[in-house]
Amino acid sequence: MAKGKDLEGKRENFASKFGIIAAAAGSAVGLGNIWRFPYVAGENGGGAYLLVYIAFVILIGVPAMLSELIIGRRSKSNAVGSFRKLKPKTPWYLVGVMGVLTGFLIFAFYSTVAGWTLHYTYLAIINAFHGMNGAQLAETFDKFHKSALLPVFWQIIFIIMTAAIVIAGIEKGIERYTKILMPLLFLILLILVIRAITLPDAGKGLKFLFMPDFSKVTGKTILEAMGQAFFSLSLGMGVLITYGSYIQKHENLTDVAGEVAFFDTLVAILAGVAIFPAVFAFNLKPEAGPGLAFLTLPGIFEQMPGGYFFAIIFFLLLVVAALTSSISLLEVTVAFLTEEFHITRKSATIWSSLVVAILGIAATLSFGILNNFHIFHKTIFDFLDNVTANILLPIGGFFIVIFVGWVMNKSETRAELTNENKMKGRIYGIFLFLVRYVVPLAIAIVFLYSIGLIKL
Ligand code: TRP
Image (cartoon, rainbow, N blue to C red; front, side):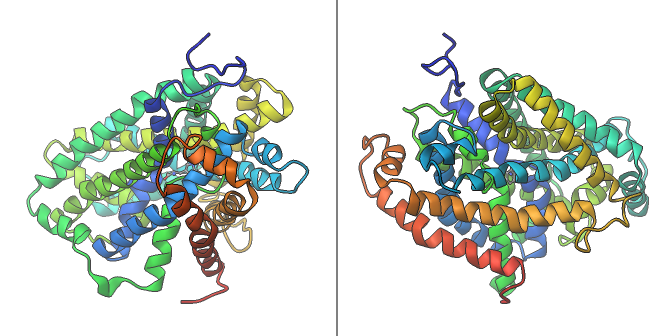
């Protein structure tokens, strides 16, 4: 019997603790950390935003993450089947259905940006940025992402890479590759950090990131920090229900959640440390916005000694981060299809990848030829991005913590959290208080704010 197989020999498991952490942290650490976090921090005053963000990760992120892991491991089932098993004949399974759907939508626009990172890795390798000024770099990005063939080509390559890993299964696919890719990502990031902090004037960038300026903290900062925590930790759509279902009974879920949250936050901070000193050293504005990675960084590398090399590894870093995240998005659907409809893993992966590709291509083309096609006044890309991050994830997260806090049997949730009461202490009481009151209330506030029902 393979080490990763369940006793029944049917359902797969992660074979090792390190494998669990690599896969879950792989899901969490993504474009959200390396591309989104630094620019959102840049727009929100740096250090103060960072403090608020960390508070949300600990107070809300960790309990929400634990809730998903509890549902998954208790039920040993996919995002939909888990609710059916734990509360049969109730509409709770719809939370899982919504999760599967959300996964499709996120993967679609995520693969667009991931495709860009592949193309930029290629451009870095052929030294295409050489001698370009800011305007030329902006034009390069503009022309590329608004064209049709090239971005779609790279997007399809990316989807195929994701599918190939998912087809191979949990232990031989996801666990095996994330165990290599995550340390690699960390290594690349450390190299970049060392390069960044040895730049002239690096202190300015570090000061911006770490010195809190509380005059910049507004209601909006606080709510943006919380939204970022949800997206960054991959919460609210059943990724961690699915991964939790592959975690063996003896593992400690609190450790898993704590380590993943720690690692995810560390990577976001390190990404900030890698980026801000360079931004200041080369006289760019920290609030440059979403273009930071694709517009300004090639320019920064171009002006830097060894820049050719650093540009390649930076974009490679983005590819790796995106890949280990998209694996988790696809796995939610594949686990659902194989278990609920008894389709093989291979055809489940291929079929769902095809659907994602169609939706994803539409998202990619919405920067160019489909730019005038709007859903609720938004392009397809913006619609997918907005409806998932601002609406579907908060709703999903809200119902997941309510389910664990108020619906599931307390003896069951306690058994999962404390490994059948082997762990002593007050941790269960604190957890229950957080998932019953603190987390749902906080999510409700963010949600109402993001759809504009309340204004701060
Ligand atoms: N967390 C990933 C990032 O930061 C993105 C991601 C992967 C995600 N799976 C998710 C976000 C599930 C929300 C839900 O890039």
